[in-house]
Image (cartoon, rainbow, N blue to C red):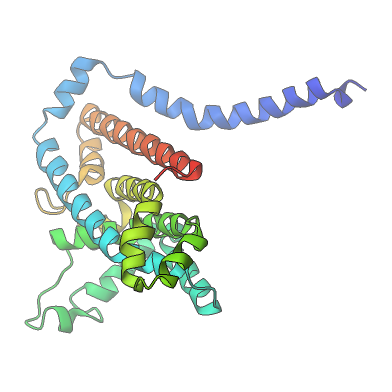
Amino acid sequence: MRWAEPRVQRAALGVLGALLVALLVLPLMALLGSITPAELSSGLAHPLVGPALRLSLITSGLSLAAIVVLGTPLAWLLANSTGRPARWLESVLQLPIVIPPAVAGVALLLTFGRRGVLAGWLLPAGGSVAFTSLAVILAQSFVSAPFFVQAAISAFRRVDPKLLLVARSLGAPPLSVFWRLALPLARPGLLAGAAMAWARALGEFGATLMFAGNLEGRTQTLPLAIYTALEADLRVAQALSVVLVVVAFALLWLARALHRRALAGDP
């Protein structure tokens, strides 16, 4: 039968794959191809853009710094743990990737809001972290941290354990092994995870809207500015969307390049 021919089977598989490629690529082509350079420049000159861009860069940068500082030691410990509690903790840390952003926003409100479980401890005077720039940082950190932690765990697990064992046998303390040996060897994987986490933080929308609100100049990041502009000026929303797509693609390309470098064993 003709369907038994390898060429026909490959063609059928190619058609099925092409349908998914079209679904993913055509909307991006429509976004990028339906705006002229003049319209892009005009949209980016809108008064809504500057404050949102500045806030996004500051908050995502701070959230990334917090994730790297706190997540790197955690990833090292999990990478070198084999017990069931470590496996459970690793699974729990991945939950923010799969839970809906609205759920993340509600969870953050119930933790850091005016009546949250940590409200009295963080702000004894009765204030609230919610609807502040700090809330934006917390929301971005919550949703993007798993991307860095998982990449860091994988990077540390690729480090040759024999090298670590030799260092320990020569008398190097655990902190020196981590700082002077494991970190340099895992650097490409760590940088790739940081790029993915930063891209996720820049694109965060749902949890930020629920927990931090949409206050121009205080909590309105680029995705929230797109949401606001869409109600009044489609071109402004499209221009901001183009910026985010370009930045996300650049960070994704960087992350993939660093990942390939890590797999190749280059420090």
